[in-house]
Image 1: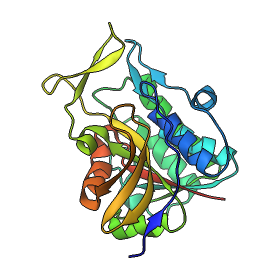
Image 2 (image 1 turned 90 degrees about the vertical axis):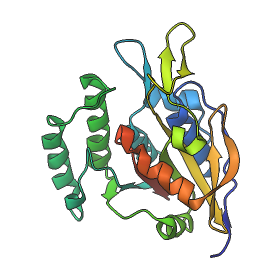
Image 3 (image 1 turned 45 degrees about the vertical axis):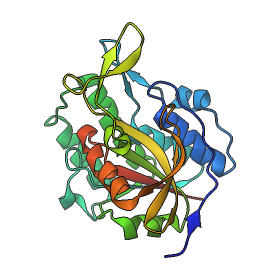
Amino acid sequence: MKIIQYNVPIIKQGLKECTQASASQLLNYYGLHKTVDEIKKEVPVYISKAGKPLGSSIGHIATYFIKQGFIVTMHVVDLEIFDRSWTNKSSDELIQLLSARRKFIKHHRYDEEAMDLIFDGYITFLKNGGKAVFPIIDQEYIVGLLEKGPIYAIVNWNFLNTFPKGKFNQKNNDFDKDSIEGTPSTHAMIIAGHKDNKFLLADPDKEHGGSRWINSGHLLGSIYLAETDYDSLLITLNK
C-alpha cells in the first residue's frame, strides 16, 4: 500500500473537549480556522445533573461539519443505538427507527437527558442531509477512506493508551485512575495517515496526544471498543 500522510495540526483539548478539539484540527486542515471555544458554542460539553462532564454529542458535531459546507458520512459499527439490519435504509427510515429505538435503550453511566441528546444528535444529522452507512471497518476500509482525506474517529481511550479506567473527582474536576470503581471512556481524534500497516494519529489528548503511529490492529480494536459508549464509528468529510 502507498504511504498516505496528511499534515493535520495538533490542537490540545481541555477536560472532555476531544470532540471539539478534533473537529478544530480537521477543520483547520481544510483551511477553516475554528477554535475549540468557537465550536463549543455550537456543540457544548454535556454536564450531568451530578456535575460530571460526559463529553459531547457525536451527531451534533457531524451536523456542525455539514453547516461548514461539507458532505458528511458516518461509518457506523455500533450495535446498541443502530442495527446492522438498517443497511440501505433511507435517512427518513433511519430517523423513524432511531425514534422508535430511543425508549428501549439505557446506559449505565448516562442519564435520560444525555441519551435524549445523543439520539437528537443523530436524528438532527440525518435531517440535515448527513449519510449513515454500516460497513465492516477493517484496515483496507480505513485506507480507502484515507485516500480521500483525514478521518474523524471515535475510539476507546483506555484501550488506545493502555491506561486504567477513570473515576471522576469533583474536588479537582478531573478523573482519577481507578481500575476497580472507574469506567472506560471514549475519545475523538483524527486518523491522518497510513504506512507499513500502521496508522498516523493526530490526537488532541493533553497527556497522551500528539502525532504518533500505531499498529493497525491496535487502532481497529480501539474503534470497536468505543461500543462501551455506543460510539463506535468514523466520520468522513468531502467538500
